[in-house]
Amino acid sequence: MGASASGAAQGAVEEARRRLNAYTYLSAPERLEHVAIMRVFCSTLLADLAVPDVMAKLRQAGGSAAGLDPDTLTVRLEQLVQWGNLLRSSHTVKASSISEYQRSRSRYQLSKLGERIQRDADGVLAEADAAREVSNELLALVERGLRELADLVTAPGGIEPQDGLERISTLFVQFTEFADSIRDFYAYLGQVLSRYDLDGAEYQGFKELLLDYVEAITEDVAFRAPRISGTLDTLWPHLPPLLDRLDTHAQGLAGLSPQGESCMETRVQRSRGRELADWEGLRGWFSDTGGQGSQVDQLRDATLRALQSLLANAKRMLRSATGEMSRRKDLLRLARWFDEAAPQDAHDIAVAAFGLYGARHLGVPPATDEVVPAYTSWWTGPVVEVPVALRERGSRAQRGRASAVEDHSAQKQRLRETARQRAAARAAAADELRSASGRFAEVRLTSAALGLLLELLATALGNAQLSRHVSTDGERTAGFDLDSAGSEDAELRIRLTVRRTAGTRTVLHSADGDLLLDDLELDISGLSAAVDGEAEASVS
Image (cartoon, rainbow, N blue to C red; front, side):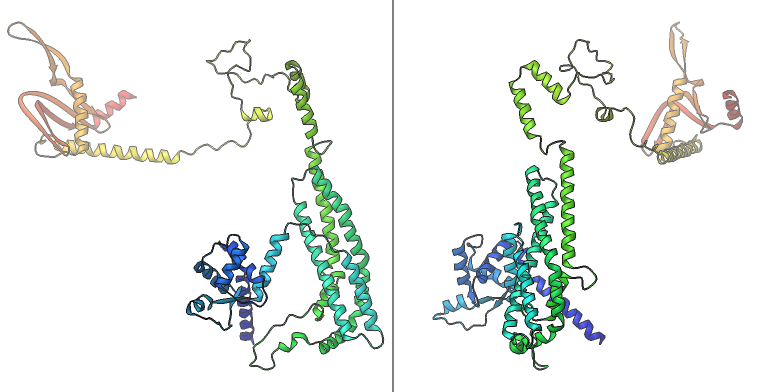
């Protein structure tokens, strides 16, 4: 049981998908061509057309599809067949030649679903935005037809079946037309009342429409709805036997129903009024049968909402233009006054109309390097930037909350880490220099160690004392005394001593190259703890 129910649900889903696919041609990129092709098929009844026939009709009608070639048109027709809008014809092709057979062998005809969708699409394209009048006179005909039908049904002997068929068909045609016109009119009314750009003339027109036309509709419906509901209550017990008599008299398409299990199922859509469900829908329109309100109640609520929307539009227009609905005439008269007035009179008119009085001092100082004489006109003077708050609101107070203090903890941590790595690299370079002292020719210094050595060497040479020497011939010469030259770094605990010795050569090998020092000897030693203590004491 569960499997059969699941299979039925899956079949219903597939059937719904198949029917919805038939709407695809209305949104396809070639929708204008598809619509033109469907109109060709909808203009005929039970006719199958070949590609040349469709092409001739398209060229006769004109439009975007008139220039389609046979191959492109065949592609469009096959696509419509896949969507379910067209069917391939099964008629036998009679041709007098092979070329004629090739042109006419593919014939197409309209499907029921495709015809229904195209008819609705043409109706939407032609009258979707139009205001449809309510067929209010049909409601009186519905009331009279129900009353006469109830009198005939309840009379002795009942009603003749053929007379009953004619009356019921006429009754439901009238009611369907009335209900559709009500639905279309209120949909249009809701579309109009949702606008916020109504001017005075449009508002006046829609106001009269609501107060006169809609009021007449609702009053007529409210007057006839209780009578129709009462007649339906009288007729309701007699409906089942009446419908049975009508089915016996005129079976219609009910004979298409399957007679055996092997027969293919054919769905038959009965005429309106031949099923009890149609009468239930008619009764629910005028009276509350399901506890959710009748259509008459919904009509009354919709009218009330329309009036509220109309009042909202009126309030909006009154707020935007105090007094009259539009100030256009006043502005045109003011423009004429400006055009005819002398310059001084025009200034007076502007002051009186717009309140353009003399300039007020806002207290915004000019730039410090810009001195403006008092006699300078503000028309030709320099421009001063006025803050937005002062210009728009006349306030100097800062608006909004203050921004949070920017967090620099990440940058500080990164700088501390960089300093730590630099200090560690210098300490390693100092250790390398202390271990290489006295054997520079045998070791190869790193770039960091060589850089630290050059730094100490530059400081030592800068500390060398200038001394004067007397030669044997009595001449005095000036030179640097390197015996006392030296430099040190207390933080790294390293000291460099430079001595000048004639004929010596010191070679420093490093990753960046070799450095040759003539007549110089280098001695690197460490600083003792006592020296560090003395340095700290002197600093304190």
